[in-house]
Length: 334
Image (tube, rainbow, N blue to C red; front, side, top):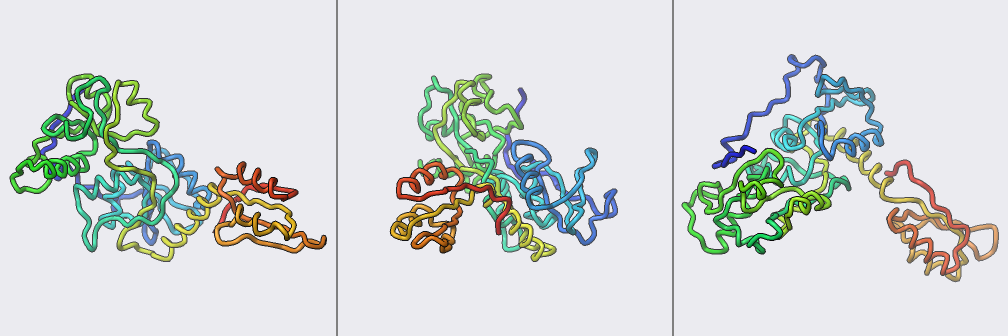
């Protein structure tokens, strides 16, 4: 497996350009540009969000651009790692990517008043951790043990930033050049993939890589000793979007889809004597809806409940005297 020592992340950054309108087989004129992961762990969930938001499109497999049929939007399919660059430079208006990729971009290219991406919405999927991992049976048990050692990672900017802070805390002298690898005692090596194999192959003493369940790392005999970033999928926007009203509309639709995915509608009947107890169990997002029934002293209650808590909520409602408890799926919400 090949690797390279990345002395300065800026030296390896490529100039990324969205194709000019004249170079594209489709016209992007007058359209909001929305970047979506072209592959990887975030893509399908991102596409499901778009479908739930009634963003209709047909993508030709040969193209990384798809025009939305029912809105003046063009979807741009890009690597998730590149999306913060396009959005941050204002080349694209909106994007879906991981927080880890945003933090990595900001570590290499700090945001300014005019550049950098703004987080709009936590999308509720793609949770993972960027962690420092070392061999389970190795001599390292603390992140400080790796100062001056070799680290392999795809996240050079965040790794250099993290170890620069550690070295400063340990009072190791630097050359005053900031947080580039030239000023670090710790040797940061860039790998584009299969980072988890680096320790076993003798390329690194430790690694910094994304971890979801941890099974892959354990299968390679690795253990986590520090979490650098906790990540999740987020919706981001440019600081200079071409159409802020359309950005707000898309964000509102996506927010509604997420609410529908996370909540169900719980309906039940309850005697007024125990209504206050029941509504403490189902307070709703703002407040429950209460309707008088024809039967004296009985009311019907409707309330949104987190889907993951609904079984326990139903148990508690039944215990306090609720009857006719129903759980309904929410198609969308605003």
